[in-house]
Each structure stands twice: as structure tokens, then as C-alpha cells.
Length: 398
Image (cartoon, rainbow, N blue to C red; front, side, top):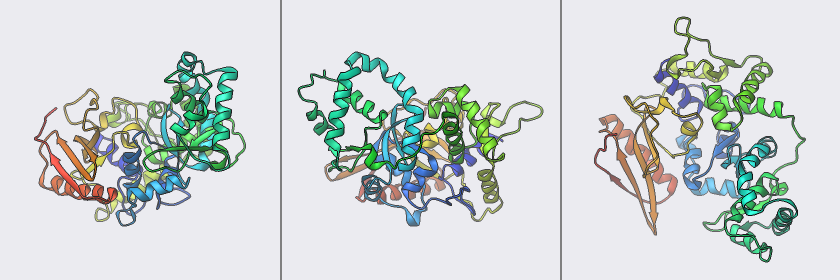
């Protein structure tokens, strides 16, 4: 497996490429943004609208929703947004929210503990704040952050404490995302948006986490899974072994090269994959007419897309030839790719009724790349639902 094959297989598993067969799963290929989240288990949602673009572009173009439709699915609670796994925003399916939080909240809480001590978020005082939050959102009342801050008036919390109180309320399964009010996000009662479920042993939860991680991100290493989930290497290595057992070998470790002792360009000795996805990818490779795995196909991915954030640094598979160190984020924040390799940056900005999409290329495009880039710009415009003015900077080599 060379670097090109690794990129091809990951793009396919991620849902960014299609073919004769979609990656196999009991539920079939995704047809809605909620399906994408369910298959992916958790999708980083730090940038709210860009993360919705990441969900939409994993659906067939003919059925692709616009941003308003994805936002409406979040408002209806078909997709929830909360702090889970690594302590950052993630989109999750309602049926997965409870067990994912139960599994990862203790570890995320330890990461947050320094800030909680700094702001006195502990004991009876913290309990009163969380009780006030619970009362404020009870009965289907969705509250903005400002409204929740008001219910704490008189409790004497210092400036800066609010963000960590809200995260604590999420970790303790008091609050979760609600319906937006204009451009403001809200919080709702956790138990009103998340179905009940029995507690799960941690080893069982981690085995499912490993299995579903590989469904949409394999081939990947134990280190990739650790970086993505926040769990230790010891935890995830045990989880991968358990996932292999419980799937009858569908989750499997890739064989090492007999001479070099390495697996392709990854340079790791513990790449794992979902064999059913690998079989679907192989079928796609045999049907060249159906394949859209073009080395000159351009993708405009949001900065925290799972194709980027689903793997551990330095993420050599996505870096341009000759670049060994990680590419440092800059503005424009988002990443432009050709054939799964980064070739520049991009971003959209909105000022009043004007929306501008700016592209900063690192090299000149080929004719086919230019055609593909213009096509995906049109897809972004359709997603945003407004006309987009395009600005292309001069080539800025790394």
C-alpha cells in the first residue's frame, strides 16, 4: 500500500468518493446528514456551518441538502452537538450521545479539572448552577447561552466561568444542543433529546467505538484512533482487539510487508481496517467507469473535516510532496485538496448580503483540476444558497 492507495481508501471510507458500492454497513449507504453522523459515530463540529458542509458533501450530489436543511436537522434533534471524546464540539446521533458521554466524560472532566478549580466549579456551588440550568430548560424550553447566564445571576460566578459550567453540564448529561434561535445556538434538556439506554461496560463501549471509527476512517492505526478519541494507546489497542473478536475478523489488522516490516507509506506497524469497506473499495477499483477516484479531483474541505482530524499528526498522507512537517493552519482556514493531497487553502466569508469565497493556491492547477475546482465552488454556492463571489490569490508556494 503506497501513499496514493492509502489516500484512495480513506477518501472512499470517509464517503468523499463513491463507486459501484458504498462502504458496507447494516444500515446501508447514507442518504441524510443524520445518516452520515450515525455512520461516523462522532464528527467534529467546532466550526458550525463549515461542519455542516462536511456532512452534506458526503451525500450524493443529486440528493445533497443545503445548509438550511442540515441546520434544520440539527434543530429537530436528528443530530446533536456536544462536547465529547476530545474536549471539543462534535456532532453525534441521539442514540449514541449517552454512551459516548458516559465513556468519555470522566477523561474529559480530568482535562477540564484545572479550569474548574480555577473558577471554583466544584461541590455544592457547582450543583446549584447545574440545577439552575436544568430548571431553565425543563419542559422543552431551549435556552441561549445568554439566557442561561441570566439564571446564574446572584450566584457570584467570576467572568470566564460560564463556558466551563456549560461543558460540565454537558458532561453530566444535564444539557445538550437545542434548536437555534436565529444565528444563536441553544441548549436543551439532555433527557428530552436523548433516548434512555442501559449503562455499558467501558470495554464494550470502546470496542464499538473502534469498530465504527474504522468503518469511515480506515485504514488507520491505533495511534490515529487514540488521537481521534482521546483514549490512551493501551485502551484503543485493547479495543481494536475486542472489535476484531466481536466482528468475526471483519475488523482486522493489515499484514506487514514481509521484507520491510512496514505497511506502505503510513510507516506504522498497526494499521487496521474494516474488511467489508476494503472489499467495496476493491470492487470500485475494478470498475473504472464507475470510479470517481481521480487524482486531479479537487475537494474543498473544512479545516476540521474528519479526513484531516480523523488521524494523528503529522498526517503525512495529505501533505504536498517534499513537505515533511505538518502544515500549520492559517487564514484562509480551510483546506483545498487534489487527489487527497493538500494544494492550498480556502474559506468563505459573509458580510451582510455579500459572500466571498477566497482561494489561496500553493501551485498552479492543471486544466482538469481547474474544472473540478470550479465545479466544487458551485456546490459550495448551492449549499450556502446565496451567490458567491470568487477571489483567487496568486500562487503562494510553501
